[in-house]
Length: 94
Length: 473
Image 1 (tube, one colour):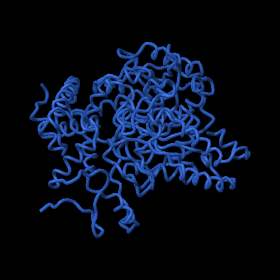
Image 2 (cartoon, helix red, strand yellow):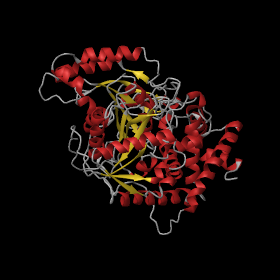
Image 3 (tube, chains in turn purple, yellow):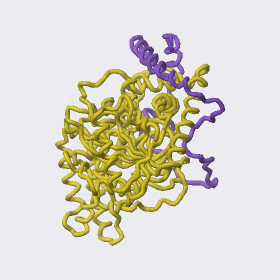
């Protein structure tokens, strides 16, 4: 077994997704099968091979530090589920 | 597309008439290709195009009605990603590709269906329900850009944009019998494309022919300071007359013709390659020894990136927020539980797992190293050939009611398309024949970085010589 019930719940907590019991069971079995397939990578000798995180050798893209226009606040707030006085509102944190 | 452009110039038809005709056809669409149709916006765009066409400088796209995959932002028109979690979201800006299309006078008809967050190969995991394949409505159009594929194949638009992270343009192009191009990573701006896996995602054209795909590609490509992975370079126009295939070295990797490839697909692709050879191409055997590891690498790298990219859907700034949360943590966890569908959850979970403490080296780091080997395979293959040819998918479009309820088997359908994404290479799918049921088969061509000219040129020349792209539609 690649992944336990406990690990599924731990990963769900990290990913901030609440799972019910049947979902957790289904995911454990799916992930187990998928992770089992990933074992084929163990056969590849990667000693001394650099990882690729990006397909092209680009370096940092910088621009001049100059003021630019931005989106309209009213437009942006229209998408917010809840807002007050020009701020996005969320449940009490402290 | 080009024929419509000519009709406009001879004043045989007007963009408003043409747009009305497409909207009328979309109203009776039975394939469920669109999530949102923007009738008012389209007619307004058509009127703007009529003005543009009064100038002799108007481009080929002026007044051409196109459709946009619904994971690409359109100002003032809701963008859903086919997900409940984006309910109510209306972008405040246009994606760079949409802005470019509008500037050139293209008419945006609406937003096409997809698998939720472009994660899938069937266009079934959508809040809008599944899209059906116009070639046979009992079958899937492929995915994830299945709405765009179906809209083009059914003649509901002149062309469309899709996005391709592991084959999402090429697979529906293959299943629907149209032409689709995944451009070189960095050649088309991703600004305004809702991110799935940022080191793999690319926007590209889907169209009835390679020539039309070239017109769309020319319109959207180019450097964009708003996308930090956009590549600054000279992007010249594509030669719409095609290329002379004489002496073109066509690499055929044996790894793409092995176990798992349907025999009828194999035969059609081989006959397509024979046409290229007949036109003067020189067949060269090449090896891509690590390509078979592509699916494993992809579903580690792509899900890892997705788990990070999709962290933004938290119920705070836009989209769904559950009612009466106990606290912030409860709001995040329940909003995401309610808003994401099963495949998206599966991928976020997988991506979170492979990045988590204790597993990072075994999965993510290992996969990123094998990704290097896959890219090196291509570099070495392209020292011996100019383009690589093979199948796009191992099978033709399958029936929606025969769909296997096993994620891994669906992932394996991406086996021939994934390597180009991992290496950032351009790749094109175009029709090269049919199976015994009359379903289209796609041939995939791949080229070195920024050599879309070879792919589109070969595609145009191939289609001038064959009729597969016209048959059955």
